[in-house]
Amino acid sequence: MLKRLLFVLVLLAVTVGGVFGWKYLQMQQAAAARKPPPPPVVAVTEARQEDWRPFLRTVGTVVAIAGIDVTNEVPGKVRRIHFESGDAVTEGQPLLQLDDAADRAELEGLVAAQRLAQLKYDRLAQLLPNKSASKADYDEARALLDVAIAAGEAKKAAIAKKEIRAPFAGRLGIRQVDLGQYLAPGSAIVPLESLAPIYVDFSLPERHLATLASGQEVQVAVQAFPGETFTGRITAVSPGIDQGTRNLRLRATFQNAEHKLRPGMFAEVRVLLPPQAPVLTLPATAITYAPYGDSVFVVETGEKGLAVQRRQVETGENRAGRVSVTSGLKAGDRVVSAGQVKLRNGMAVTVDDQPVPGERVKTP
Image 1 (cartoon, rainbow, N blue to C red):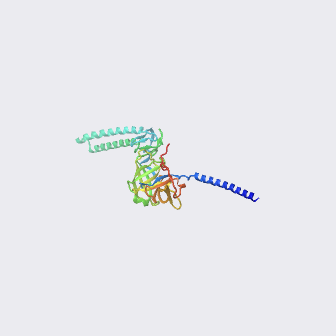
Image 2 (cartoon, rainbow, N blue to C red):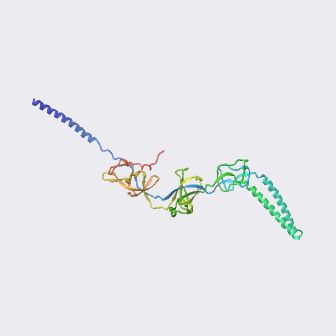
Image 3 (cartoon, rainbow, N blue to C red):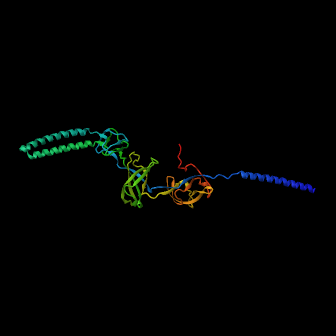
């Protein structure tokens, strides 16, 4: 009985040991078959120096150098219209003709009276040297001739005022009169704006007075043409400061050859200041922002290959997706620009061969 019990116990121990040994062997083989995960792939960029010219930012309004509603000086009925709404016109170009038939008839009578006065004056001028006419008659004839000439010139001027001409070159707006319409003096006929060159008026706080001067370069952008910049120069600086706002008023002039800037437009204005030393910049995607400070992952070459180290940096201005770095890096440092979330200090990485995101050429 004792021998049988010992036999069963030995057999059970051998069976259990074999099972555990088999499982242990399988685990060792599986562990040997597993490989460590590959290093994460990251995009890398270099910190580079750029010439960022400082500027003052404000807003302004586009203003025409000359802009009026063309009006008539004398009353009359519209006989001819020489323009269409939106036409470009030159200085002195006829725009509208008022009815002047009665004035021209009166002018013919005044011209006849002038001829008669001239004849009387010439006759007395011939008789005066021979004492055949008195000096008083001669003087009276001269005065009547002068009155006749003045009356004729006045009527010619009245007739000329009934032909409305463009006072300066520019572009017309929408016509506000019709053929046959009677116009009282001062009636609006059509808006006229001079578009080239054109002004942009803006204001800046008084603390910038020492950095502003005539001839300074100005850049503006308008919503009608996104991504396009127009360049002009300051041509006028107000001599005084507005007491209500403590702002300095300025005016810049732009050539506007293509007439893209129009009066009344809202303009984003940048007044360029003198150049300064180059700044160190990175793509905005390379910066990790946190309450305790901004940081980047710098790629370094070690004994086992490429690895990353977190480094604290101080950042400055942001322009067009790039951020200036004032401390913590030097030119040429390689920095992770995408994929920072999966990184930690000392981790090995693999660098993506493609350019930095945002700097890649987009294919249509």
